[in-house]
Length: 476
Image (cartoon, rainbow, N blue to C red; front, side, top):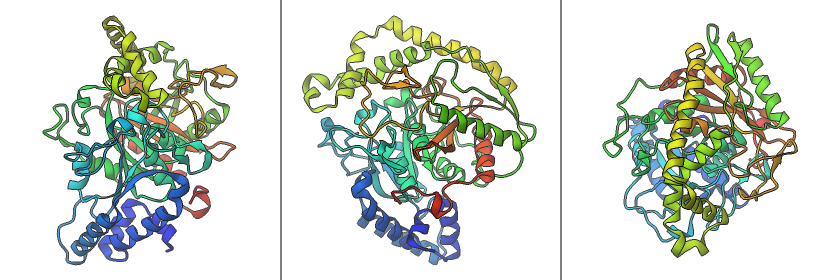
């Protein structure tokens, strides 16, 4: 097995090989470091690397395996940590010059979970500024290239995480998801990303109080995503809303979907969707049918009011947080972060209340669907990816010749942050003509994590991806 093959080794297989001693954590980390040193100058997925510390941790893990000591869930695996999640003693800027001097006093709650499971933190991944856009890149750090086509953005805000997985510079990665920030880059980079139900994974305060905010895993396979999700989930005293442990998700999936009823919507009723995304979504629907699922096309009667409600909620909470920094730091901030902070000035208490009323309406329309169907399928994004230097403020942005909001109008992800108890996984659905991957979302009933993973795993078992050298991105 070559070094590059090791870089694309699944986490589950790596753990098995650590156990039978056909591979050591040190050997795997050495391969990841070589890949990173070769690709990072052009990819720009990492903001920081801790290779020396990681090597010490890998040697310690290797010793645990060789001496038959107790082994944790992720023992010896490298996990890239998103730049906006604090790592004790390390700079944590959230992609903003506002926090360029900041050093985390402690690990964020997701990082605590990953460390406790034996994960090795070897790098930090690039983001947008303060989580305010669906792209990756800021005044702090240039954009992260899409590994499949360098003229396109990796998506965001967890873009560095998804790009590093696709490029083979990490084995696992964490992310956070307020409007799709795990699923957006997962779709554009051809990997797997999971937004868990609210409370399933602990979130650091005070954004744990905002039901739109979720921390979750990214990986190259459904099984690896389940592995990291198992490590990140469970109750934590630091998060009032974190839920008790549940049965771990299975790490291996296969077989028939016979007996499953799956609803689908191409546009959620109001989103303009690129024809290539539509075609790949239909191919995946055809696969689901081949696997035995009954498919039902759904009309949700959702409208653009969904986007307005999302904007009003975000402006009242997230925008207000950004706005606090505008008086002193606006000259250091990106135009899109300044614009997002400014939205807090216009939103009213009435608008916030109306956003909750819209969420209630959305659930009234979706609840009967999920009573009838085991899951809902829709595209993750309305187009494969946006250009590398995409501006969320672009007034001339369009899809299919029709004007589309450049900030969030090309996403089909944020409605399921608004309906936060719903588990949502994004998996690859194919490739566009320019070589960029596309993705679909599988949305489950409230807190039914197992069903979405089972459907995703059945798709992957029938149509694997990123498993041979000729399926890997050009950057690799």
